[in-house]
Length: 118
Image 1 (cartoon, rainbow, N blue to C red):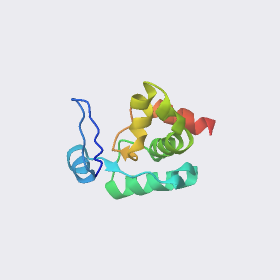
Image 2 (image 1 turned 90 degrees about the horizontal axis):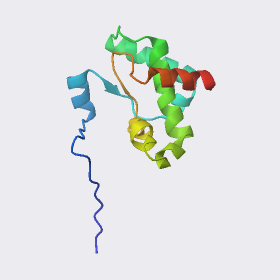
Image 3 (image 1 turned 45 degrees about the vertical axis):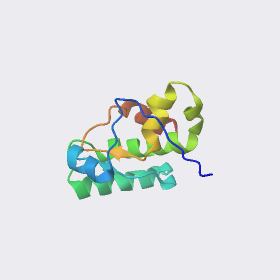
Image 4 (image 1 turned 90 degrees about the vertical axis):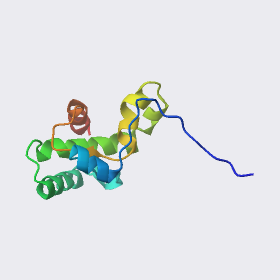
């Protein structure tokens, strides 16, 4: 007997594939990569993204901290997925890769703190 797994999503849930996100939001999904745990690699990726997309509303430093922060939460803080409420608020935010766009992230203070404490 074949088992079919399904998940029920909230009624206000929206999902965009990579192309739709780039077209509609102007953002980019970088995917999750363990190398982003290296601040130098996160900074190089931030430079690459800003250069390739011509972004001017976010700095290399801000974007590098966001990239690094996503990786740190995903790879080093997987226990957050077990914490009620934080699962939706934090861990789920980073679980599908690093969504970045030409703007300062609304969680920038979190990324700055993770960067400073690492």
